[in-house]
Amino acid sequence: MNLDGSAQDPEEREGSSVCVGREDDIKKSERMTAVVHDREVVIFYHRGEYHAMDIRCYHSGGPLHLGDIEDFDGRPCIVCPWHKYKITLATGESLYQSINPKDPSAKPKWCSKGIKQRIHTVTVDNGNIYVTLSNEPFKCDSDFYATGDFKVIKSSS
Ligand code: FES
Image 1 (cartoon, protein in one colour):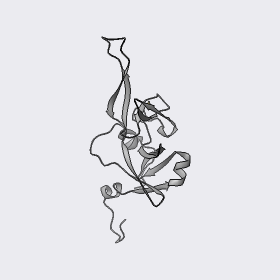
Image 2 (tube, helix red, strand yellow; image 1 turned 60 degrees about the vertical axis):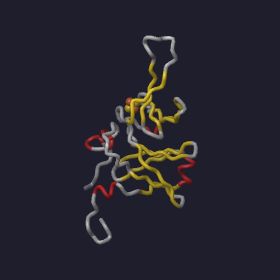
Image 3 (spheres, protein in one colour; image 1 turned 180 degrees about the horizontal axis):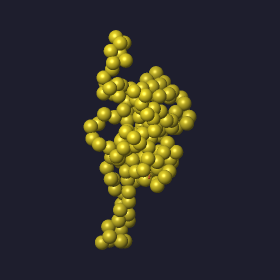
Image 4 (spheres, protein in one colour; image 1 turned 30 degrees about the horizontal axis):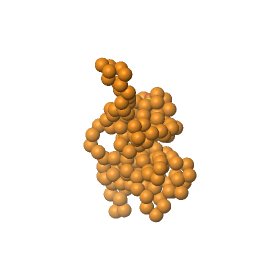
C-alpha cells in the first residue's frame, strides 16, 4: 500500500529493496536467510563480499543455506548438500568437470552449464543489509522452486 492509500504496483513492489538484517550479524555468521517479497533467499558473506541467491537449489530444491563454500576453478561456489552441485556465488552458474573422451589422459576441465541459480543484489547502508530481487527477464531454473506451487512461503494475498 502506498502512503496515499493506493495499492502498490506488484512489479514496483518486487523491485524495491528489503532490509534483511545487520551487517555485524552476517559478518559473524557468514550467512543468513530471509524472505524478500515472498521469495526465500540466502545471503552469504564470503571473503569480504556479499552474495544473495534463491535459497532452493535449481536441481531439485536442495537447501543451499546448509551447503559448504569451496573454490572450483578459482571461483567460490556453494556446494548443494543434496547432490553436490556447484554453483558460483557471483553469477549463479553451475560448474561441472568434463574430459575429452578422445584424450583420456587429459586433465578434467571445469565448464559452466550457464546461469541456473537466480542471483539477487545486496547493498549495505548504514550497517543494514538490503536485498533487491533480480528482475532480469530470463527464465532461470531456480525460479521453479522459488515461485508457484513449489515455493515454501505462500503469499497471503
Ligand atoms: Fe542441489 Fe540436487 S538438489 S544438487
